Image 1 (tube, rainbow, N blue to C red):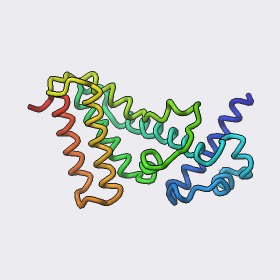
Image 2 (image 1 turned 45 degrees about the vertical axis):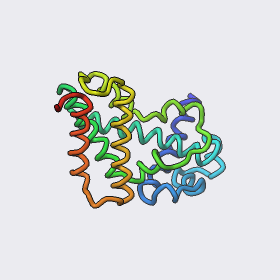
Image 3 (image 1 turned 180 degrees about the vertical axis):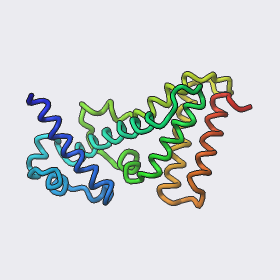
Image 4 (image 1 turned 120 degrees about the vertical axis):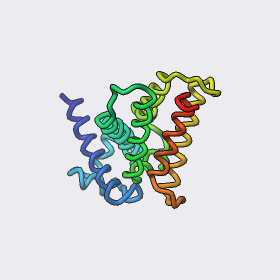
Length: 192
C-alpha cells in the first residue's frame, strides 16, 4: 500500500513537471513551481526525488513511454517491414516536431547524476522498438551491422529534428519525412 501511494505521489510531481514543460519549457521548472502545481510543499518533493534533475529524469522517462504508446496506437502493425518501420519513424519524428519542449528535455537537457532505478529506462523505448523493427527487415545492403544501420538511422533522424526544432532550416517536416522514408528504404535494402 505504501509503495503504491509513493508511486502515485511521485506521478503527481511528474505530471506537474510535464504541465510546466509543455506550457513554459524546461527552463521554467523549479522545485517550488512543481510542488505547488502538484499540491504539495516543496520540501515534500525531496521525499520522492533527490533533486530537480532526478525529477526531470523521471519526467523524460515518462515522456518516452507516452511517445511510444501514442505511436503504437497510430501504426498498423500488421503491415510488412520496412513499411511498419517507416510509419513508426515518421510518427516518432512528428511527435517530436509537435512537442519541441519534450525533445529538448529528453535529448538536450543535462540530467546530472541519473537515479539508478530509471537509468535503464532512459534508453528511449521508441529507439528500442525501431531497432527491433530494423532487425526484422531483410538487410541486403552494403551495411552489414545492425548496430551501424540503426546508428545511421537514429543519428539522421535526430539531426533532422535538431534542424527543425532549432529552426536552422527553411525546409518543412514533410521534406524530412520523405528523406527518412528514403533512408529507411535504402538501409533496409527495400530500394535499389
